[in-house]
Amino acid sequence: MAFENLSEKLQNVFKKLRGKGLLTEADVDEALKEVRMALLEADVNFKVVKQFNATVKERAVGEDVMKSLSPGQMVIKIVNEEMINLMGGEPCELELLPGMAKTIIMMAGLQGSGKTTTAAKLAGKLKEQGKRPLLVACDIYRPAAIEQLRVNAEKVGIPLFEMGTDHKASEIAKAALKYAEDNNKNVIIIDTAGRLQIDDDMMAELEEIKNTIPVTRTILVVDAMTGQDAVNIAQGFQDRIGIDGVILTKLDGDARGGAALSVRAVTGVPIIYAGMGEKLSDLEQFYPDRMASRILGMGDVLSLIEKAEAAVDEEEARDMAARLKKNDINFEDYLISMKQMKQMGGLAEVLKLMPGMNGSALSIDDAKLAKMEAIISSMTVKERRNPKILNPSRKNRIAKGAGVDIMEVNRMVKQFEQSRKAIKQMGGINGMMSGKGMRGLLGKRGMKGLF
Image (cartoon, rainbow, N blue to C red; front, side):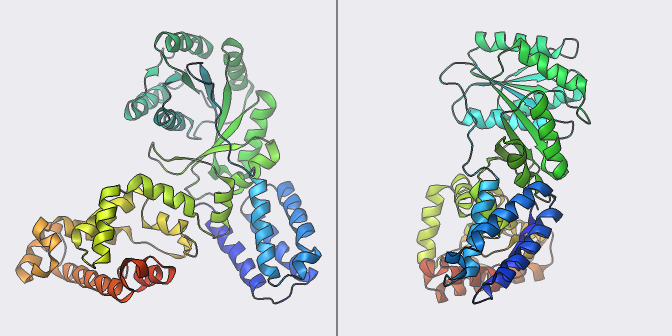
């Protein structure tokens, strides 16, 4: 996942700082030397790293910090604040024109950056916000790109305007604007052609589109996995056609993080959204403070809450809370929880967002989770709701239905009973939801065998 190596290195630096009672300027210098190396290895722009370290040092060696009761914590606080500033400080909204005024968004980017998929993701997100978007296919060089946009447009329920590959991109954009006016659409998202690298032909085509129709926002889509090159790409587009915002894609992949930490500082252009997965719903607003928390290993509770609210049915949550209070959970609760966990991105994603739970230090065995789900799905409703009736013959039938050995069924039933006992020992739902209780439940009881 993105930032894992950077997070691990920074946390090691902070661990040393916390271990010191008083800090000297030499201690700060040594810590910042390690921070510098960690940022450079994460492919952060070297000029950005130099300025970042200078700003942190200037604040960290002040008298208030050096003489504070916990100087190590104060330095970490300063690093967090400066990292937030580096990424723009406040989240930046994609500004749209009010009412039925036509907002025209031109998507730009190199080939392979995920631009076409991101255009559909953005259209779906704006539709959820009550807008009436129209997708426009202006990549006239790749018929496959038009087909890809058509498929994704259907998936998110957005109309697509296309004229094939026999017209100029600017002509298609102009005709799309007329279509939007006739069909009551107020956001027009234009997917343009990409190239393997920035060239004059691509830039001239984008300039021609902007000269033909009144483009409101030019959004650059950048692959986070290109590292520092992403910054050079963004600067190239900014210098030639001007851009109003950046969407970073593949931030959930094996990215070192340099693009996220460098783009705003180098170009002055904000990161508006981040692509966090392959599903068309995996487009998140970019929050500098939350991203800094993730990078520094502090978790991201707000994002976790938002994911939970989207995944968890309120009535089911109330019912489960009531049963937890009575210690009356069953295998149906397990099944519901697993499905909700999938909707939230999986257990590894959830743990990564929890403070103190370093997702990179946990190896989640998804195959075991899938096996558990198969076992529960092979039970009858009666067996799920009353696990006590699971005798050997029933377990044999369940094992055959799930395609596993009966030992797997016995192991899961045993883990289930351990979970029930753990909840009882921790005082029901209140004890379970405490930090100590959660660590006990995840590390020693119900999740034993998953890591």
